[in-house]
Length: 222
Image 1 (cartoon, one colour):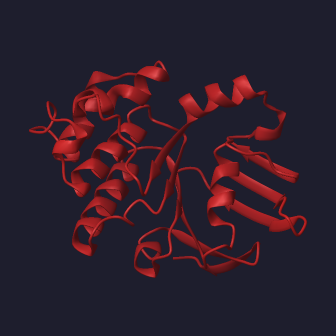
Image 2: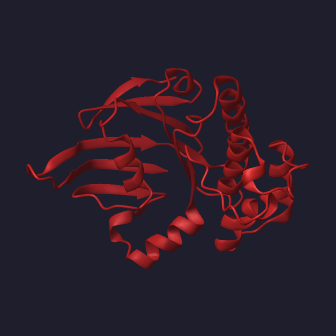
């Protein structure tokens, strides 16, 4: 599903180039889950942005479902992001002017994949049935993240990218939201790459690796 091969990425600074990723190798099988760990500044979010096609590698190859991202134009990448990946962030990033029901359908409608039956199933599994007419500001943090997860999965993406999705939640709520996410993934063919600093969260996923000074260190098979 996801192959990251010999990826290098650096950024310019007043002191010269800063090398963030140094020959990263990463592989994620279809339908599996992988936790990406590492200290602050290790390159976790940089790698996630590269996998999402939001930035370009200096060298190396990233391919998703056998499609190399560096061969796509900007318009092709934009369409690919709409149809093939879902994104969940620490900040919920819901559209404040839309009700919960419309937030849930937003990504799927953009992708041309709105499926009322699948959305109804997501609403039931995420416990959002009595919240559909509310706006994001009327929801708790845990409720907002459940909506964000439902929105990301509504288009049935091939790959879900999550950046500290429980980082803004208390431990109990975070555990509940994570379990809901994993349960929904078990009912789908979507693969998951999650950035997390939490060993507790990482242990819940099938595999985990650690980034250290821009390189991958295998943590265990889970």
